[in-house]
Length: 154
Image (spheres, rainbow, N blue to C red):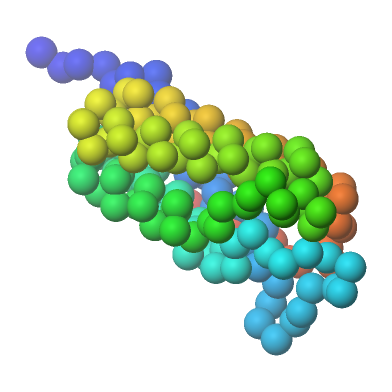
């Protein structure tokens, strides 16, 4: 008997497509952020994005070990802000950064226990925290426009 894939598969595919159209996480090599902008939260944007794509693919395959490895790379690619970073970043950015790390940590724990639905739910919340944090940071510290990467060819 053929089982219908869970509704989450559509969410995973949509996430992968959105990530393919996301702007790069760092400015082009050789450029420095303006003096009025704080130090970046993550400097290896491409590696962080690759971790998200790898986690998404691992969830599609229900490969708990690969999910955990990708989530480990995601966690390592984004430094944890502390309460004393509020002077550089707004309190909202710090709160969403904390939320991001807490949800990634929970997703890692669930993946290690092979509880894939719970891990995926936390991964989804981590992405929401990430997007919200970026929206807040862009409003507070507008960056120069960076060209979007080419859309994946179908």
